[in-house]
Length: 169
Image (cartoon, rainbow, N blue to C red):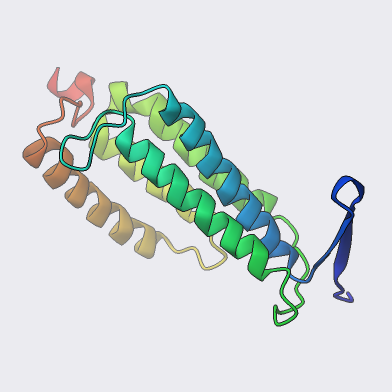
């Protein structure tokens, strides 16, 4: 497969852009778009000040920083010094495992509890890796379950089912 640059013309601005690194360009546009989305959503809330933050303060600044990073990344992909790199093909199998694991977690959380739901999430998401092993998935699941229990259940006292309701009613 030959890798080449991609030229985009914007006639309205009489501008011609040479995209050398499509992956970075599209990632930058994605970040900038997400940042602009957060800026628009935060616009409907009170910002407040740094000492008395309103509900829109955090999403506004996260959106602004994300949009700025996205624009910088996209601009760097246009630079003559940027590595010429094509957009890699999608790994649909891995994407399916990761999205499926998130859906399974959401569907199981209320009935199966945090411990079991996180175990399913990690087991399914780990299948997306080319180097999948059950031993690594079990270790990762144990670590994530332990950290989540400490942070969400014991420290933050989030009222979330920990175990399946059928076992501990």
